Amino acid sequence: MVRTDGGERRVLVLNPTSGSEDHVDRVVELAGDHGFDVRTTDHEGHAQEIVSEAGMEADLVAAAGGDGTVNEVVNGLVAADRLEETTLGVVPTGTGNNFASNVGIDGLEHAFEVMATGERRAIDVGLTNERTFVNSCVSGITAEASGATSSSNKGQFGVLAYVMSTIDTVTDFDPIPLCVEMGGDGDEEDDRWEGEAMFVLVGNCRRFTTARRAQANVEDGRFEVTIVEHAPTADLVGEAALKRVLGRRSNAETASETGAESGPANASSDHIVQR
Image (tube, rainbow, N blue to C red; front, side, top):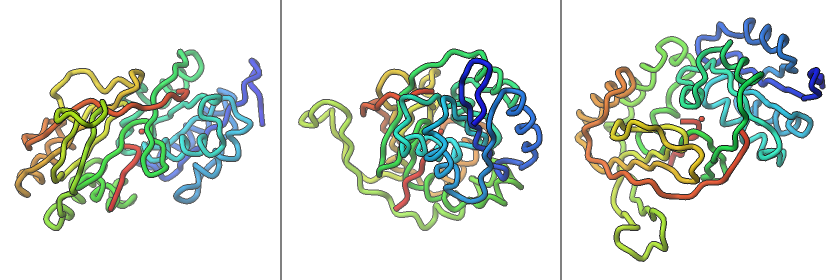
């Protein structure tokens, strides 16, 4: 593995099929200019496999792809037991790039500039079903629709592909029975919520509504949790389109609370939970 002039060992994990798939040559060029050893993925889960091996030797690991690639790279660092020792970098080449956007990364050139000269900070991570996430974790209709969205549709339609999948999913979706404890010991009524949910959205480094201008604070040890309890099917389809395309807030009934504690990591939805 090549070391930079400063002695740092750098690996970039490149997903060549993320987003519009036209980024490979430019990413490889920039990676070479900045002293990265480039490893290219060729199947789902490959980024995690690469990092679980290369992560033992690297001081800086960059994920060039979308939020799914970021999630795989982070879980590779967990598998290599290098989450606290290795710095995570992000090069946004995916469809949504939510995590990169939320931490202020604006394009390929800016990503490499930040990795070269930016400040390194410790951020929170979350854990669900033995998977680590850095940006967000979703369940319900959003998760089902995201899981059903093909790579070809994302490449052809961009964020509209998620709206199309939501329309196909929503009419047959049954609500999730849910019990949420929001901090404390769970004995107080205000610390507990029970009901049936259409969406469950756990934000670590993003916001899911515009109720607050600030995004979820990725350094405060807490999550921003939004639960959508009830909404007619027609409203869910219409609001999903508005949110994906225009960024408008949903009018569905919601219960939102900041709660569960999270753990630190070096520095995205990057994780979905399906039934």
